[in-house]
Image (tube, rainbow, N blue to C red; front, side):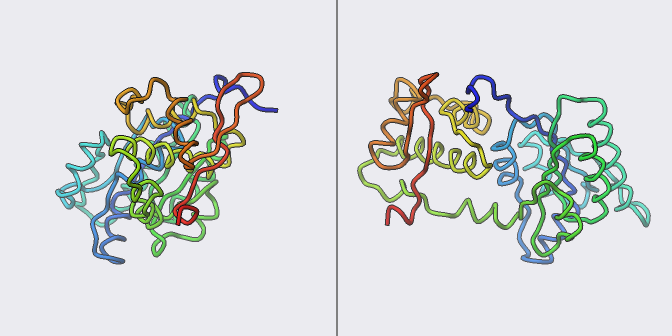
Length: 263
């Protein structure tokens, strides 16, 4: 039985970042700088982020602070003035996460950006209290114990790879720049919802997710009078497949074109 698109409440997330773990891991594995945008982008596909915190001795990461500030991430300072400061950061992150779980019951999902096995007990405790836990970490520096404890674990390298994949609309000469921008966004979100295992991907669900990722999105700025009109144009161009729910009349996306299909 399908659920009405108006009855599906978006998930409410808290994002906790063990910045030391990611920054050091990136430096050791690739020498590249840690980027927050791919993580926020993936988390917003899952739901609305209500809390964003990152833990580190920020005097050691002056270059990373600006990007996090711009993303409205709260920077929690853990000074490295003694041996065991890393443990202090871990403890503070654990305490804050548990405090949030007990005091804000409307938060139903926690995204823990770390690969450190020390957080496995936190994952277990959050799940005991009926919270979904998603882990994000480096493939080369994530504990098998932590990975297995999470409801889902996403490798950071895979998020970076997603941002470089060519989409089916970019090489098409029959589309305007505005159409390419809108279609790319819709297809990316629709794929994410299908990947999340949603039984029914309503048009309203896609637009809701787009608005989380890009609050300024408005289909009228892309010359469409409604979001349904935009989707129907995409179907005519072979980019998505649609059906219409017999009860509500709402559009449902059943599949999304891939680059291989267009080749």
